[in-house]
Image (tube, rainbow, N blue to C red; front, side, top):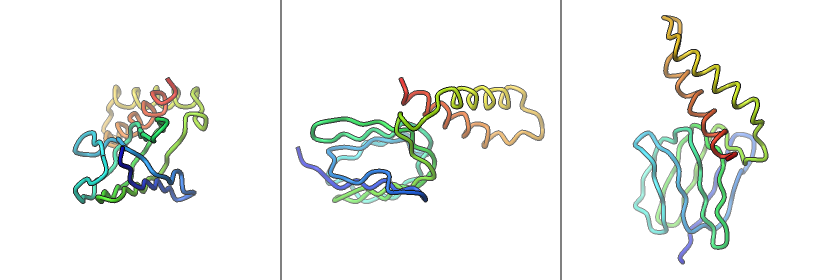
Length: 131
């Protein structure tokens, strides 16, 4: 199968760089799957699972907010945080999920609902990638 270049960059490191057959992730417009030759576009990344399909393997990571540039010859994802399953503390992710759910449930006037929902999405992504 044909391949293209994928680069996933955070402020701290180059998280992933290599040739892939497909990459999938969440955007503000919904989930997107990119194959070689995709039409050019720029999208806003939402928290979720990053699925990287290589020739011999499929890898998953928890992907947080960012931007992605999609070109026919490659994809560059610039994200705040991306974590492999081995980098995630499950107990901490579960605690963050509980805190976010509680903030959403209480919904006081001081609650920043968008921030609480994003925190919940990040926690769910971390927990999901561990399963």
